[in-house]
Length: 135
Image (tube, rainbow, N blue to C red; front, side, top):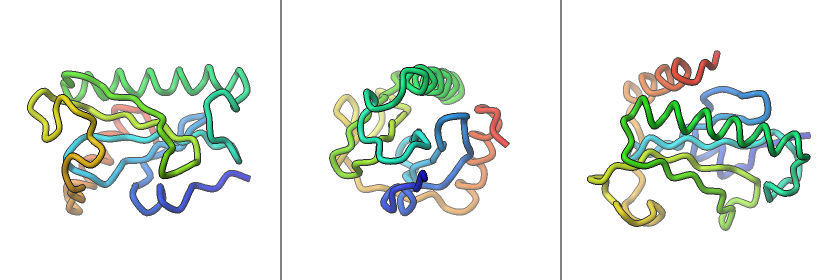
């Protein structure tokens, strides 16, 4: 049975679900940052997914990246599956700008996370549900 890793549950807000993946917003207003978590138990790596699930994850990741890049006018989309701190398979989708706090370097450890206030969070969740066609 699928269970979201406690660290992801602590750091993120649920946006909705794709057919394979849970869609989470990282609570860090420094960057528009969505995480996809395939709803499969005991999966740490993409190659551990079935071939159908691998294709579905790529489709979901590509659709998400395209929607985020267009809506937020990204200079670059960073997509990564690291798993060094959280072993559960999850894919980060981060909108990057040439003038953001850590450009051109990776975002990890560059600046402290800045949680959204309630209004910002509510507005961004509504935006993501709309652009990603999530209920």
